Amino acid sequence: MTSQTNIEKAELANSTAQVTEESSKKNTEASAQHNTTAQWQRIHPIGIIYFLAKFIKIFISNFIFALPAIFLSFNKLTENPEIWLPVLLVLVSLLLLSTVLSFYFFQYRLNNDHIEIRSGVISKKHLNLPFTRIQNVKLEQPLYYRWFDYTCLALDTAGSAKQEAKVVALKSDFAEQLKAEILAQHQMDNTKESARASEQTSETKQNANTEQLLNTRSIKDLVIHGLTNNRIWIFLGGLAPFFDDIANHVVTYFKDIGIDIEQLLTFADKPFWQIGLYALTITIAFVLVVSLLSIAGSIITFYNYTLTKLGDRYIRRSGLLTKHEVTMRLSRLQMVVRQQDWLDVLLKRINLKFEQINVAANPDQLSVQNNKIIVPSVFPNECATLINDVYPENNMSTVNYQPISKHFLLRNLGFILTPIFILLASIALFNQQLDFLAGCILGYALLTVLVVMRWYRWGYASDDNFIYIRKGVLGVDYYCFPIYKVQQVQVKQSWFLKRNQLCSLHLLLAAGMQDIPFISENIGLQLADKTLFEVESTSKSWM
Image (cartoon, rainbow, N blue to C red; front, side, top):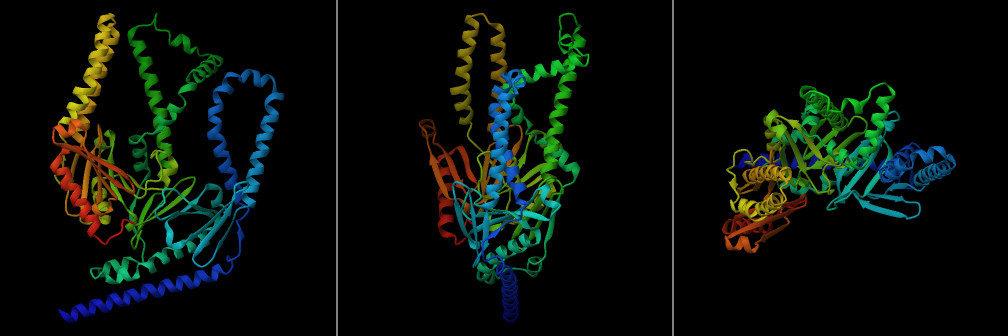
């Protein structure tokens, strides 16, 4: 037994020495490259296209707010080009001038395991970022970069909730070298910790130097993801102020080609079956258009999707127009989220998310999704395999979830929803507004079902290593995170909760706040004490 232990220690020492030697070689090779970039460097002129696309995007996002005024005065503007043509020329000139100046003043250099970036035209910015502070390295290759083999290198700093550095036009091979050096720097910092990890197996050592393919997504999977995770309603909500103008333009267009929409939608002289057929046709056409847009968004975002593993790093690559590469160290992982909307439940598909730092308030933004590691529309067995790979000791699928208290229903239905319904129903009866009363009854019934489903879905559990939370309404989401990742614990009690010996537990992680409401006061305090003890006693870092 002693000789076997000595052999294992010798193998571990040799492996550590090999890692150190390889890291040193990488640093030596990169140092030669750094000799050419120790001075301030300008990016390639192709970067002008990047800045132009960036400013056009900003202009369009702000232009949306001016659309109502343009619609209202469209005829006057077309009749008087001397009003809008000079304004348009000034805007185009400012756009081109800003693009050229932003390109001219953007410089970078590499010096002593640091990257420095100077940028800005009026407001100057000088960023000095050590490699050791870099949390994630992301490569983005827009469509217009592919033909010339250039890419964007995006760097996130450790402990920061927003991206701090981006070199917008690097040769792809140099960007890969720089990325490898940054990763090697972290590997050297963790050499001693790796040497102490005596439980490391020979298979893990072998896989540490080879990129292992974990998952891919086909076009069929992306189509299903687009159907089940339709976010086009956000876009349609933004167009709400312009629906009248859009409808008028549509009616005018069809009238010009000989189709009178207003006559078709006049129901007074039409039989019931024809009205129903019109409504069904319009609904199907609308749903089809919305679904196609959502599917297109899914394919654009996740086309050619691959999830690979290199040592302790997980790498996601995807994108049709812009290729994105997101790298995540296992130590940076804060929480695993298993999401299912109602259609996912029917199709038995799961969206798996590896949550790091909460980088934005709106998780539906496309740019945010491009910076996350998301595995879209996987089967349950694929989901379980991926979760077990990052958290081998988790019991997410087998643990017994405890329900929250039924006082949740009493508070929301008995004290909030029902009194409002009684008040509105009384007003409707007093004024003999039966249509309004029917709407109140229907709304009350619908909201009651949603509140009951919310209570039914909410559950929680814990074991020696993890805390598990389940919640949802029509769909269901599961959250799993290591206890030592918790940064803050809050136990809150309102008068109503204290009277019923209940509490709400709030757990703050770098990925956001997780709540467990309406649980027993004793259980809440025990779980809080357990979490705080684990955080204080462990030597593991949340980063």
